[in-house]
Length: 236
Image (spheres, rainbow, N blue to C red):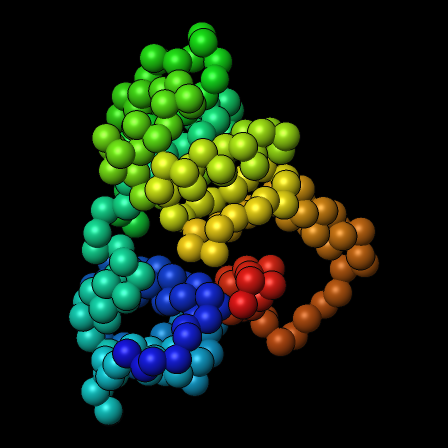
């Protein structure tokens, strides 16, 4: 792998490529060129080659990429060949919905614990996997016992910073935040915030504009820019 810093936009694109390759594999396709991959999924073939070149040489000139081999390489690059154990803080509607989301398993994420401060919820289990809800005061102990390395914050904004502080003290280095709040973190902690309100307001802006007819994408496919969260550019 090249020594320069890999941008988050690049890793976002790798995730998109992996999803596309998974679809090809499910369809029984064995090899694919960057051009065919780009055309089928409305991506950019030059960008695909450039992104993959950061991590090595994976294709064969004149043949393209072996789909299963490239899937394995990208899975390894993204660290998805190791199970990521997830703890969710907040056992309300959002937290329990996330705990019940089956899509995590396909990407090798396993929700192993929920946390809350509601006495009526503590000790209960959620979903078919029977994920236990723990007292949030015991987050450090449970993080160690369950080997949690990714945490999700699904609490009201007023409590989010306190929760993040507790997670950082417990040694969690990767946090996904759903609370509508700007949080302060340590430099060695990766924090990503998903602001549902901003996303909905962006959709509202689209609905408020007169419809435009576009001929640049007649099949209605998602462009690469639409597949890649633009707000991540602020973190580079």
